[in-house]
Image (tube, rainbow over all chains, first blue to last red; front, top):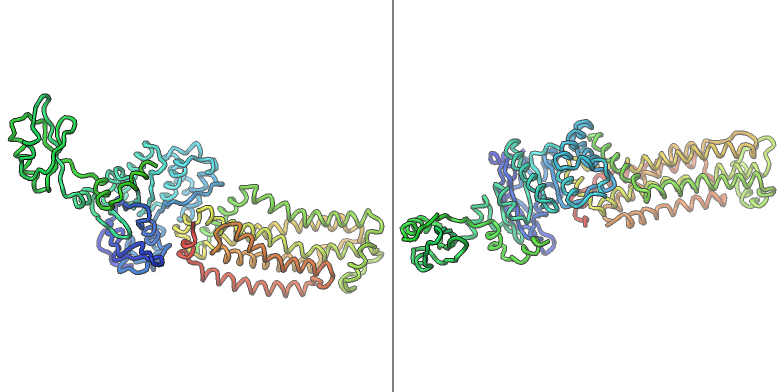
Length: 323
Length: 270
């Protein structure tokens, strides 16, 4: 066992993986605290699956300076890590077996006895609304039902680290919401760590305590969603809401130091400032304007804006969102 | 080694294999036709078709006299029945475990890769040895059990239909016990080992099944050698052959466990 920095579920330094001439991962660093909900974001082919496979010991890195999961150095310590880890990736279930059997079989592989595996399987089947189909063959399930079952399977072994690959793909909004609530609750109450790869940026922004944006094998940014957004989007948006019938000229706002753009929007205007330092002065100057204002508030940049700015291939993201 | 994890994999594989008639039917029907249907037809023909044994004279004389005991009052039909039941069909009983274990092992390893279910197993705490053992057991147990089941039916047919022709109960003979208890398990394990090795690189069930099935070709030679009287499967020969296969099995299992790498398997996943 390695002496990992206190409280880290995953620590990666200088991880590189090469496939022939293609460098899928190019010296990436990750630090994920225990109990975090971590989102690894990136376009297709960015290296997300490769990262997950290496962290789970089913693929060897080309070179790495440090690779520690749950306090164990990999690849040597993988046997101690696996009993504590649940993985849901883009794999298939046993279609000819029942939903319950798919779960109990994996429960037994994680050391649960038959009774406990059955109890836990029933718990997750109920949680995901699949109790009435527990005995049905998985081949009769919809895509969303299979997705729920894959997630349930990953949770069967009481994992303290869970990898989820596009967990809400194929789920209806209620199920997605329920799953995200579950993830937050388990990470908070059981101090379990979640490592999620996803393209659903709004969902990730709400659910994750930490994110990293991976593109072409390189981590472009990492931190809390807001830290990542601010590091990628240097300008600041401030919404100025006007009272009904109040009039304010665009030029009055543009005259305030730091303002570099103004757009009319709904019941007010959205002002773009050059940087976060300009915000206090802008708020004071706006409050001193003769027009009746209902409020002046910063609108933080979204994770999606940051992602598009960093990855720079916005059209790919929109196509996938449409899918 | 945690046996319960290997058992969980074996149980899951068995349920998966026998949950579809696409696999289960050929596994059951074809061997039953070969080792039950053919002997019944053979014995019925000998008993109820006058002069049937005369047409087999060439075949009967190719067997050495030492291979056939002389029972009191045994006719040429009785000699034909004895040679057929004790020697002619013995080779078919090697094809049954080969066929069954090839299909199940190919489905278990290459089929899992093809259906994209194998990667999920690789993330679990199951060790490489447990995974291999579970999957080998899931192929080995039904292959041997089904061959023994066929043998039980064959024994009933041989005695119920053969005794009136031969004149006294005669079956199973010692070479059949050697065949069932030593050679059949050793051959089944050998075939499974080959299929597992092939499956590591095969993209799917069909490829692994085809390559694994080619193992049966030399065994068809044994069947032909039996039919022509060139080779008589005596107990000694069977036990010696089983010993060779057992040695090969040990080498194969060692190679499989040593060469089994999750990273290697993942690199061949679709």
